[in-house]
Structures are given as C-alpha cells and as structure tokens.
Image (cartoon, rainbow, N blue to C red; front, side, top):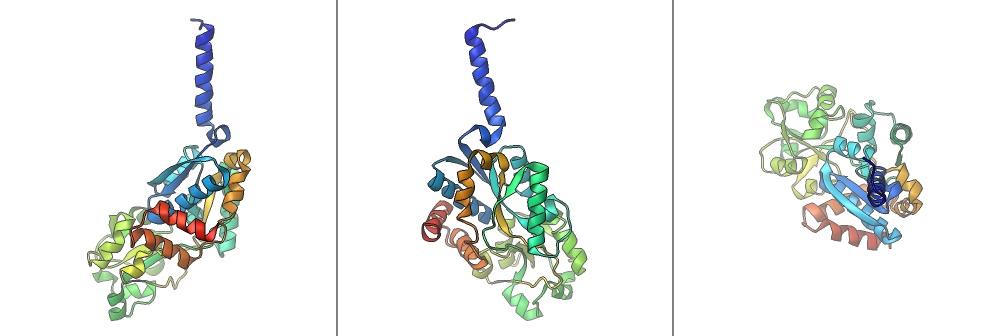
Length: 297
C-alpha cells in the first residue's frame, strides 16, 4: 500500500531518529558515559561526565554501575555507551586474551593499537595511577603468620577460606592464573561474591583472603594488608578513558576536555577519593565536583 505524503514524512522522520540512535554519538549531541560495577569506576565516570559538561556544554547521560568488564565492553562496541574508564591490564588479558606484557608501556601501546583496529575505540591518556589487584589478608593474620607476599599464603592456604569477586574467579589474570602461578589450594573452592562485599567479609572473619583493588580506601580503614605480588603475576592496570572514535571525530572538544585529566591522579590520590565515597559515605557527584574544582579549575 502506498503511503500518503504526510505518512511518508513521519516515516522518514522516525527512520532518522532510529538511525541517529543506532549510529551513536556521531549523530547526536548527547553523550553516554558508562561505568563498571564498583565505586572507583562510578567515581571516575562521574569525574569524566562532569568534566565534559563543564568544558563543552554537551549533555551527558550516565550509566553507572553498569556491570563488569565484558558488559561494558559489549556496551561500547554496540554503541550503547560512548566512553568508559578501563584498565590496560584488564583489556590486555581479559578482553584481548594476551598473557602479561613485559612493561606498562608495551601493554598500553598494544591495547591502544588493537582496540582501534578491531573496534574503532580510542584510548585517551591515562589518569596516572595503577590499580592492580590487591591480594589482602587481615593485619593480625599477616603479623601472626608472617605473611608479606602472596607466595607466603602457601603456609596457610590449606586451612583458609578465600572469597573473590565474580569476575576475578573467571578471568585469566584472576584466580585460575593466580592459583597456578603460586600453587595455591584453599580448604575449599573460593566463595563467589560481589567485590564490594569482600572487604567487610574479610574484616569480619567470614573469609580469610580476598583479591581487592590496590587503590581501594577500605584496605586501610578496615586494617587489611595487601600482599606483595612477588612473582609478578599481575600486569599493569593503568586507568584511562576508552572512547568511540565516532565521538571524538564529531566532538573533538571532548578529547581536549578529558586531556586535562591526564596524569592528575596518582595511587594515593585515588585511594583518598575512594575512601571519601566508601568510608566517609560521601555522594560521588560531590566528591567528583570537589576534586575537579581543586585539581582542574
């Protein structure tokens, strides 16, 4: 059946809207920032979103606490989000399925090249900190059993109960590889739990060892000790924004705005920001706003 002129016009308009939505930010002036499902990712996403808003005037939608690495990667490659903060070591091992590289620079170069070639994704300059996995125990246990490095866990693992985040249990740079590298065998299979709950579970004695984040403010607040990765199992995990190339081509001002964040957060600063949210229970939007006002005026 032929459509009348007015109906055709409505159909063309609707098709334009749908194509604009499917085509991502190159066809819209609304940017979607995603985040993984833990505090640091939410906080960095909020810093990124506010920086874009304050420097460009573009509208930013936030999809915070979206999910783990694979959820966020799928979202950005599908065009459901335009950018999010990723970690070089995570991209190198979990997404690209490489074994750990020899240096932070080589890992960063490899992920930048492969992400651009395979998915037209661009890695922007890093924030300046390395958030590696922190295999942690209670301070009193570290002192009692002389635990300083991950290899020391072999002295107690047979009698201990571990608890790890869901993603850590399945990733090659997570528990399977860690157990093989260090010869770890616990009293029973590790408990799978939300990463954010592992710290309190460890402090309360419900489990004996976790794999948290080295920049998490809860480690110090709960008197937990991160053990040295003495066999250098974990690759570098430098945090940086990953963005769709279509976004940066259509809005080069976004790259300029985010370039102001490069190198502005070291490990200690990230721990302080995380502690403000997780320990002091401050709203992440206000934490981000205060940090930007102080560090990127």
